[in-house]
Length: 288
Image (tube, rainbow, N blue to C red; front, side, top):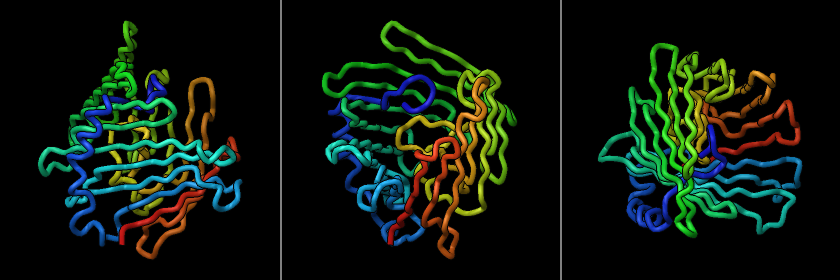
């Protein structure tokens, strides 16, 4: 998982993953999705410090079902300056009950050296995740790595977050009440006074459509559970500043975009003001 405790991808045995992959393959990109130029099909990120053709760091490919629900995200991670054989693959499958719009389950296969699988289950309240539980396995020997649960209780601008992770005989748990500020449907501020759950975050957004929004699972806080997640707000983030009690700021990113006439982004330039070598350029591609 990506957030609080672990650096692992989240997990389940490979047999289950591939059987589920067969289950959904028949309805990917059916109906009008292929011809809807507002649907994101690919996002490519570049490290422009390297020559063209050697600068790709990530390629995300998005697939949908006939209801335009996200069904699969694949990420190919590359490392400019390293041998071409150093390539990682991360695939996330989304599962739905009937015509429900929100997935009840994801399975993420993380092939980064050692292969891990994360199977996660979700419940919702008002369109946002209320609980998220995961089982994490190493694929080659079906070793159970850890289980994780996190729950969210919303009351106005306050969100009570409770988490628990079990790793063998080790149990870690924590909780905190976060203060969330929203503007135009976007989270623009997140405050955790003790940094028990997350960093403190300040965001600025534009007023344009964010095509990554429909490819994400949404929480009542800024939360990255999956490796193939984007913390996408309804509009595009133009500035992202993160703090802790000890480091101010911990992260400071600025984004600038070029847009189509209808307001959908074509490119993004991400400047890391604290580490210019980590700056990136992104390219958006849509179905035709």
